[in-house]
Amino acid sequence: MNDQSDQNRADGELDRGAEDTSPEIQQTSEQDEVLAQGENAGRPPKKSKMPPSRIAFLVFVLVAAVAIVVELRARRSYTRTVEALNQAFEKQDQEGTGLYRKDLEKLIHGSPSRQSDELARTETFTWRGIRTHHLQVQYGDLDFVSSYSTPQ
Image (cartoon, rainbow, N blue to C red; front, side, top):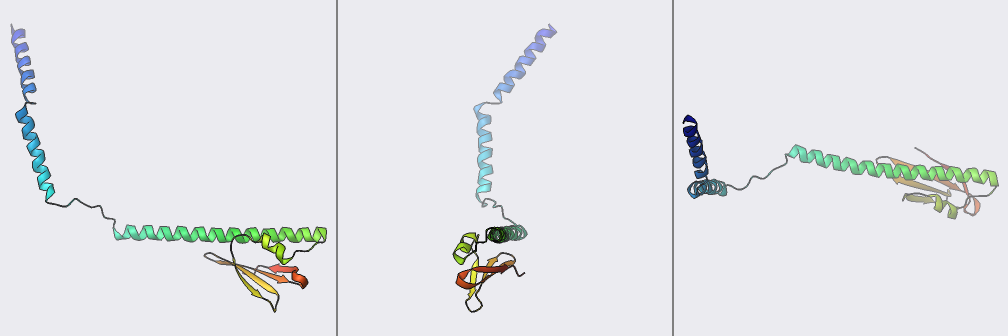
């Protein structure tokens, strides 16, 4: 008989658990949620603000990244131009041909600024990055490229 009474007691507890989800209890929990939302309604929602030090750091990183990209591009263009001139002069020595100003235009990589001095018959190409890279070309007769130098 004790087993029967234990079973009835267990069934009663299950029934009470089922009663906990009654409409009255659900209504009370909904009211609690509405009250909680009402308390937060008076306050503006929290905005996540970045501290000024973090903003300064991000600006610094962005500026540094741009500067590095500009420097790498300038250095790469300058290096490729000097290598192309070296090859052209080696070819000139082997074949006995010359390098003219119009041919030089094809060897210039990137977009350097140019400064010409017609009296001295020189032209200076300048690639700007963090550092400036210079290439000075000396012309001979008939716009023949006689020499070049890389003053640093």
